[in-house]
Image (cartoon, rainbow over all chains, first blue to last red; front, side, top):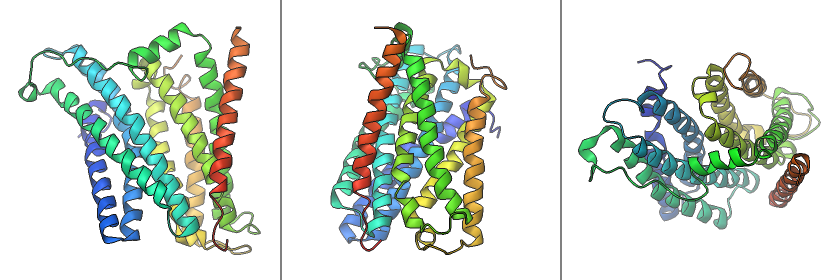
Length: 313
Length: 34
């Protein structure tokens, strides 16, 4: 198995959004039937991790496209239809992951998540599954003629959330790229600022502050992440060739995945939450805090190196 | 509208929207006892 083969990585990762969402919905429904908060918490964590893994699933898909689009028996229109369906499902998946994260954050702060946020997660996850299933089918049909109902390519998606619409937006408005770039840097400041404070406290710096005080800042970091995910996806979709063959970009995504798991840890950890003012942190938390800071610096470093070590711009 | 004006306007509006969202989320942060 060659993990540097992005087409192969796409084949491995593309099952996660569909199967993961089914597992998340199943756990959440079971938790509601059994009135079990542990199951509910687990389902929210599943949604968050699945949303995280949906990012490389989407990105490697674009690399797989460039690999197979000129091969015999591959209809480029079928790839575009799959891409746009996947993009719309991806957006809903990220929304589900974000709302699930808010629920996890509230779970930690109040020891119970309000019904509205659980209801919103369930609704969004069902909508995500409804979008993800056709996206997955369209993807399978690209290389599996045996499952196609007709030999015609499926009709392309319409609306503003398609590759064609996004590329047109960037080509026709020269303000879009600098706006997105400016917001990407502001979002980065929010993420790095908030997560530096939280992880420095885990490292044992600023012991006078109890952990629950810095935990309160986390939504600001998540908002920064939302801004950067949106603007980052705009860059990627508008100019995919700058990224799909760019090694620093893949390192950036790997570091981002690990940093995302750290965000989940600092959001839900009971051990970290229990840290009162003046208390030092256990060695495990110190290791988590230190590694998170290294990971976020890594995300910034690989992002900055896209044009220098890679082939962007 | 010029490029700089457009960039500044959109960035300011987005930052304001993030600020409002952050404020609303922060209002949810109050905990029982902590």
